[in-house]
Amino acid sequence: MSSPPALHVSDLRKVYDNGVTALHGISLDVGEGDFFALLGPNGAGKSTLIGIISSLVNASAGTVEVFGVDVARRRGDAMRLVGLVPQEINFNLFERPFDILVNYAGFHGVPRALAIERAHEELARAHLSGKAHLTSRTLSGGMKRRLMIARALMTRPRLLILDEPTAGVDIEIRRGMWQQMREINASGTTVILTTHYLEEAEELCRNIAIIDHGRIVQHTAMKALLATLDVEGFVFDIDGELPALLPQIEGVRLTARDVRTLDVEMPRTMNLNLLFSALGESGIVVRSMRNRSNRLEELFLRLTAREVAAS
Image 1 (cartoon, rainbow, N blue to C red):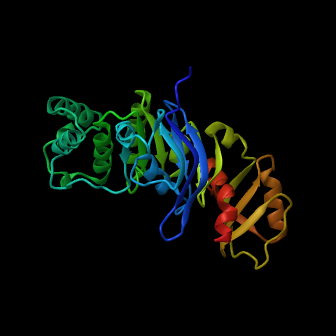
Image 2 (image 1 turned 180 degrees about the horizontal axis):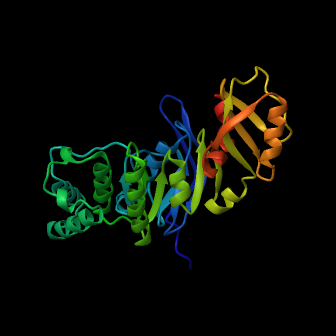
């Protein structure tokens, strides 16, 4: 008999008291040991879904199981399997990192001696051992984010949910946190990541679901999704100003960001020199160019474009 997935969501619905439907019967599975991206625009339903998985929000209908444990029927058992790192920094800034970890573990029933041992382990893994006994308000933004992850790991969850874990930190610190997340996943912990840094999801995650307006619009392997991308995007900086009417070029989508900047989406197989020639015939001279975005961002925008335009 095969073991259950780390997360099983079936026909999940959530209607709030004000009548707003946040989730429209969504279903998805996350395999044990996976590094899974849950992406979507603001207001798509991600926070509601995370809230239900972590027992903070009650579902209106449907089923959520964590390693075979029904979240609604066996809430206490399910909560012991899940660790949540929320978007907001929500620990006491006047408390020491060491005490934050030990007290959190104690609140969740971890014996003090074991909590102290784990605190030393997690502070070391987060590269915070040297800050263990300073007040947390002295930590940098990236250190606070790493401490949030360390705190969630104190209960040894089998499923770790990272909700925007690198929000507000610079790219160098973010890449260091990527390594921390990889190590957590490599140790056997299943990880679900939400992020607005789409290159982060592309770099870290093996599977992906994209949610929009409370519905799953894509659920597949990351490699399989990226393989469907048959176009690439560029930004062209223009000499002079763009004409009021952009030329029509077969297979190419042109959008003016401003009078001197052009967004370009074109087939991967198209020769750039042909595009430059076609633009030149319309009096558009390209001064410089750069990639518009990463591959996942191109697909994300395409999958959610209809809904964004409609709203």
